Length: 266
Image (cartoon, rainbow, N blue to C red; front, side):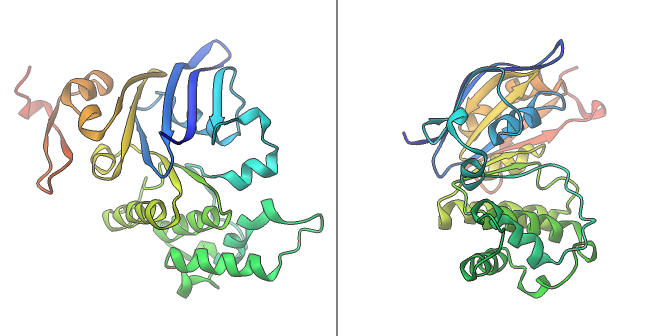
């Protein structure tokens, strides 16, 4: 199996607080890989380590079969694009200007864009369906539109891997599906490995090729959606009563939260 990311025995602490403990997993190339788990399970810290923002304290991290320590900052930015959980849209930039910033890892000493950089930015804008918004200011856009802009900027980096930390959070249902469909399209049409943190277990079940479930900084389960998303594993991690059955769409599990008044396992 060709792997994009190989994490082995990774641990990380903030002071005396152990956030990740002996984490190991592999992400196949051209995979849609989703990380799920309750708040405080270490998902965001893990994404920051993979992106190079945080340096791993213990363990080994390989990107495309090469230790992350061997990457220079610019070469890592050409390999991995990271869309963090919280991004401010209070910039005096247009959509095109923001997307074009994705070309910064490729620019020379003077930082001047060439014709090819402009072409790639326009392609990223077209791929994310932002052509009619290209000259609008970021603060004039809806939350879903802003999220597509930041994804377009990541695409503009021409990475092998895109990391996204909860890209559908606070979006309405239509935009959630649109973002997930866009990630599926990235994987299939551009061959990009997509690694995403998600709190929406049902979206994860429908879209992920592989899943990993984290709880208290440890891997609870990893594998195919129907291997990870069972009521036994989810109830143990999330600490609430759940019903897991087959989605009416077929092929993927469906999770239903069971309120106390409907619980049959009290």
